[in-house]
Amino acid sequence: MSEYAREKTVKWRAGYRFQFEAAQNKYVILYPEGMIQLNESASEIGQLIDGKLTTDQIIHQLEQKYPAVSELAGDVDDFMRVAHQQHWIEFL
Image (cartoon, rainbow, N blue to C red; front, side):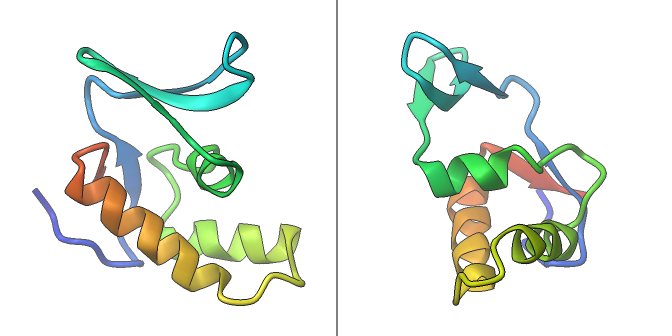
């Protein structure tokens, strides 16, 4: 498994699916053993994980969308590290 680096492409790991769950009115990560409900910030990041963008590109897009948010890059880094440790995502 590749280590986290902003310049690497990020994708959902096989067996994990990111989607909006109408019953929960939230974005979730579905996997064979269960479901993880995401907060609004994590959902914004998750929507950009497509197997084509790097973390740097995701940060750039979010900075364009939310220019007034400070520490956005650090929040994305934190999400990516946790998601990687939990085996939800992988880096290419």
